[in-house]
Length: 79
Image 1 (cartoon, rainbow, N blue to C red):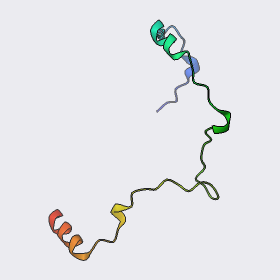
Image 2: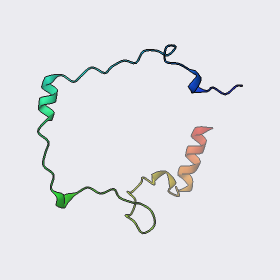
Image 3: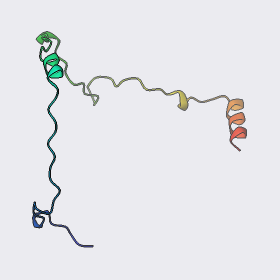
Image 4: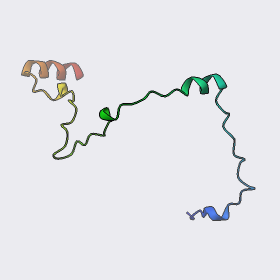
């Protein structure tokens, strides 16, 4: 297993780079008028660490302590 050094690869051996086609004129004009955002309502990223915002609620449905008869019938179904 040898190490590959990318400085040894010259550009003539590499595949030619393709240019991305420009967007159609109709799409560019439609996207031009951007909405004015109110500086009072700036969106800030929430931090879920200690002392930060409480994390979003997750579904704990699977971690419920199920009744014994439910567990038994599920185990029986699996076997």
